[in-house]
Amino acid sequence: MSTKDLAERFSHDVENLLQETDVSDSPEMPADYQANLVLARRLASTDFSRESQIRFTLKHRLLNQIEHKTVSTIEIPGPLQIIANLFTHSHPGPFGLSRPAHSRQNQFRWAVVAGLVVLVGLVLTGWWVQPQSGPSFLSSLAQILFGGDETEPPSSRQLRLQWEFRGQGGIGAAPATNGNFIYAGSNDGYVYALDAATGQDVWQFQTHSPIEVAPVVAGDTVYVGSTGTLYALDKLTGAPRWQFETDVAAAPTVAGDRLYAPGQDGHLVAIDVQTGQERWRFATGGALASSPVVAGNTVYVGSRDRYLYAIDTADGLQRWRYRTGNWVASTPAIAGDTLFFGSNDEFVYALNTATGDEKWRFKTGNDVFASPTVADDLVIVGSYDGTLYALEVESGRERWQLNTGKPIKSSALVVDQVVYFGSGDGDLYAVTAQSGRILDRFTTGSQIYAELTRSGQTLFVVNGKGQLWAVESAASSPDQQDIPASAVDSQPVLPENPNFQFTPGAWYAAGDGNIVRFHGQIVDEAGRAVDGFSVQLDNGSRSLLSKPSGPNRWQPETDAGQWEIVLDDPTQNTGWWWLTIGHYDCPLAIEFNAQCQQFVPLSESVKVQVVFPGETTINADWICHTDCQAGVKP
Image (cartoon, rainbow, N blue to C red; front, side):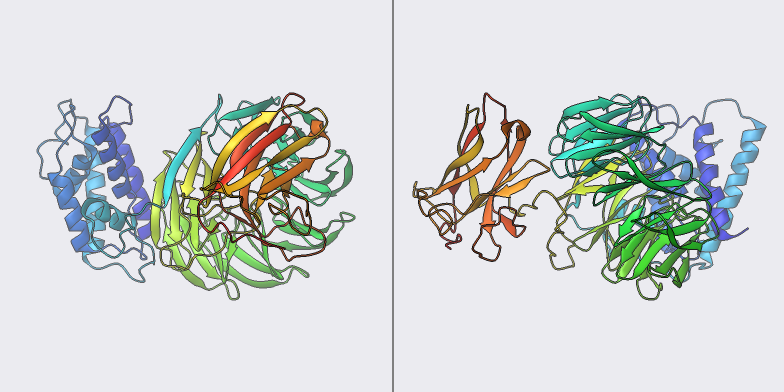
């Protein structure tokens, strides 16, 4: 039996032992006993493989600490004491329990003790080579109990809970976000739109069956697959626009005017996003297991028939296909002319996007469901073997690995050189991209197999209990330079300093049935007018800028400090809007670009509701606190 198999058996045996000795997670147990139980289980899942960092002295310190830890006051010993007894035999009787002994249980316990003796012997003889970059579970536990060495995470927390939502039946898949709202499908068939900042329910839509794949938001529409039906919903109201009969197997993908839906029946269907009409369909030999990815005029998708397909987006004809040794459930990732994906044959592949020719492959220890993530020169991907791998883009050579002890099924997110990923151990991890060093862990209490979703500095995580967690993440890795946020976020990333340059002044709404108008004045703390700053108006589907405040080449007759945005069609522009003041940083041109992307936010975002026809004119004043004369003066 290999050391890996032996370690897995050890973990299972201790779990069974805890159950047989009446150790459980019942809510009435004291909080300290629950904490002990968590530590005991982590010890049980300690990595004893060749890649382990275990040292006898470290193990001895940990076990010594466990043995002398105060036992819980309830009738049976604490779980840490049970583990210590297995190693030390220092307590009389079968774990000190006052109940009849059973020969089968005694035989089982002696078998576990024998297995542990063998494992300790392996450690004593120095059976550790090629230590991995990330710390093992035992090393992490020692840091929890003792603190102290170089692998200790920094004291500043990387992950902090903002809010949690479950709904009636529990969330069944990863959510989607447009920056202002979170869209999540539940096990009882409801689609929820939640305020991203607070987790408050904005609207609900009921389908006829559980929602088990992630929704997709594109433009002004949310696309949700329920059993047998794909729905297109208005993202602001939840009103249905159309529905299409198909049983989606994974999250669909929107590119241009088409939605690509992967079906349980093995068909990839291209659907017109405006009408819901089918454009074409492509048949594979098995259920489609991955989400499609579109690059240029090609859509790539994996199937349970063991192939990765490249299909022409115009006519649905096959360009090429690549055969692996098992299902392809991993959603591909593309960087340059290379496509990366995993297979249940335990390999990660790199192919040429144009021809399908293999560039390299990397062998993991189990199935690869997760989609690879490309970050600079690294491909980061998790495996069912419980390991997150960082591979070199060009060669596939392993740079580092981090073992969590439980399967990794969801894909990683990389933000500012920090890798965020979930594991079957129920933890959300933050690790450095270049070394795999653990920065922080956030525990959700159940396995994380759904994809992570991000909006700004917030990560959205769904665990096995159907809980949706909004977790705030730190802006950057402590050992890396800050990197500008990706331009794909629909909401601007605000400055790290909460003391923004601008704060809201006077606000009020008035009625005007003809237009929707936002306007106001920008002043400094002394009440003097401030020119040259713009206000961004965003409702999740539209994002507009006011011309810089005050008189300028585009609006010479405007009063000092004044700004204004007038919207067309008031019936289409009611609802919630977010206002942010900032700096217009686009190249100066003859015509003002109201959709300028180079907008630097200088304030928090303020949410305002437009109610037609009662309140369609919003007055919003702002107060400048520093650098008030640094605006654009075209």
